Image (tube, rainbow, N blue to C red; front, top):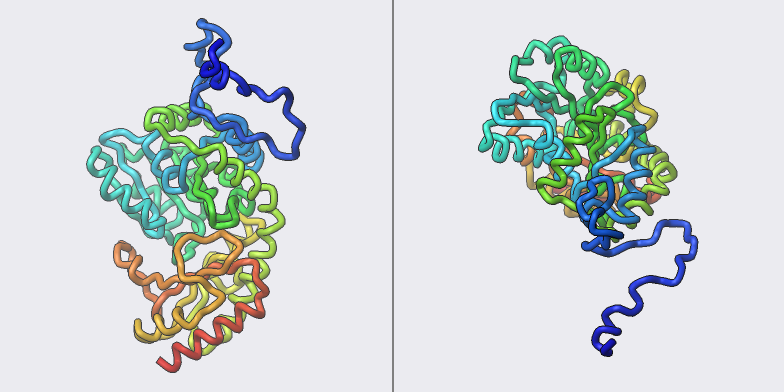
Length: 384
């Protein structure tokens, strides 16, 4: 063969793969099939978009975490939510979405689903199962839950809602990112589809996007997989490897997030500038009983309601922080803080907070240092 051909054809296969702790990263779009007959054999892997070694290993590990037979991967947490909804919804369907849902989920419902003939109604996260079922219509196909709710951290009685919805033939989907698949097991509590943003705690290092959806229902599982194919979602093998590496230490990191978060939350409860702390693991939180019954732990994310003050003072507080980064997302090793009020304007249910709402993510730093940083911020708030 000519040298040009030899250069293209040589070195395509390693002579042997050493046995490493983690699976090898395979990069490839084309999958070479063993025969002409196998080209259209759907039981075989025929194209790289469905996942090679590292995505397949991540799916297997997440299935173990979720207690499910299979997991579908998406390029982001939002894609997992929207992908799962598109997989099970059609024109004419009605969706009940908890009013505390992640804002981009709400945006998808209001802008995208509306254009395709799906109606979205938002319900108060404080509704119990009976009150929520009273809202179900003949065309209600799906109920979307979050526990705790984004920004405002309301708890829902997920097992009761899931059971009541199932009895009426309505599917349930939960965004379980706060529980990370570790602290809460939605499928074991009757939820149809469990979704999480792996970007957050599973990744754990704020450097990779990904989401997952899983179910115990084989028909719904096929619908999730088909929608992934139909829309053309995929995750890169390198990102899957990074996510799998983060998953290995999830159970080690989460207790530290919980302990640090509770230490900071309890300190904030005693501060005169704070009206209340929104954290379901605190005994006086309205959702504490449900959290204690259904969850095995807490993460590092919670809300802080300040006493009445100006936006200028809130900005002074945030700008004075040096250990807390000012940024969206959460779940990484680092601590973060944001001002939430601009995101609350779209809520349908009235929020009776005494003052501005902040959201804190408590990372893996020493909590004494984080408390010192917050003290510096509160001094700046008072001065402003």
